[in-house]
Length: 358
Length: 116
Image (cartoon, rainbow over all chains, first blue to last red; front, top):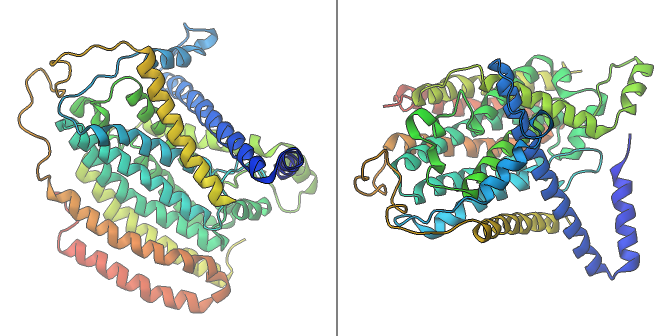
């Protein structure tokens, strides 16, 4: 295992020896910001390519294969096309809020992204209220969506934004409950501690039945949070053209698109962190030779492997199920997921108090 | 240091979005006519303003969400120390959840969870 803490400490010591303290801090912040944004965009590109190929596979097609080998350059050409598209100026929109909306959406997704633990020490933000902070920062994005839809002064955008708001705040709740269940099991909210704890065994195995129920609830509500089918009412293309970003053209739309894809990555990343052990390798208690072999594989490989597995799961759901109606979406949340989530929290508490966990 | 990093990330994301918007305005074509700037609609001129009183159903769910989300905020600190408190924590939260589920049952009974 590589410990990235030593790498960052070495860089910090080097910069402090060359520059005065404040300048060194500034340079560090700059390096971190650039690295985080580059990683963010790289994952966005990977995700868009993966979405197309996986979608094609589920529909028995080939997917993009003309631009570059296996269509690898397709995404890049799309980005350049989008950059050269005209930004249409609207006559009747609220200009300030209309411009502000992509900022809020991207800000919330970048902040959440920088909380993900890619490897031991390879994490930008590590608060002691970590998982709670992630929930708070990710719910911030709803504001951007509501603003974007409302300020466009378009019927489609407005309906899309309202549906999105209603759905996202509702599913926030069951997501919070499933995270809460895991906090009861772990007894900490700090991301690095959560993962450190799981080197002894992933929480989904240690928490057995309640943890597994929480995982399923989390995946369903995560799907709803990212506005993807079967919960894609906010941008139901056959009824609302494009939902809340109908009036956004060129890169304004592109930013919403990137944020949506990265939110899916973040949802999968959090699922990996709290249920599937983050960068912690798969271990079997007792089998020492097997465990030490597993520890040889670098942590970020484990993290990305598990994250992309969860993303693949989400894509599978997205391309398999038909769209729900808004009343069905809300009934599913309030009459099934919230009571089940509360009951599950109680079961987990009893298990933890009685010591029935591994 | 964490707060400095948080501030850095906020500034970085703002700069990133601003940079993208500036680049795209710089390299994309620009022309303006009145019809292009009209609100998008399926072939017909749009009727009236969109900024009107909207369906109350959404707000009802927003109020319900507020109630339950604040409850989740109260439960988070409890969840971190439940292992140390043991049975005391279990009994305490049983009362808390009982009143909470009572609230949900009341909303259910009042048909606040139906979509009309």
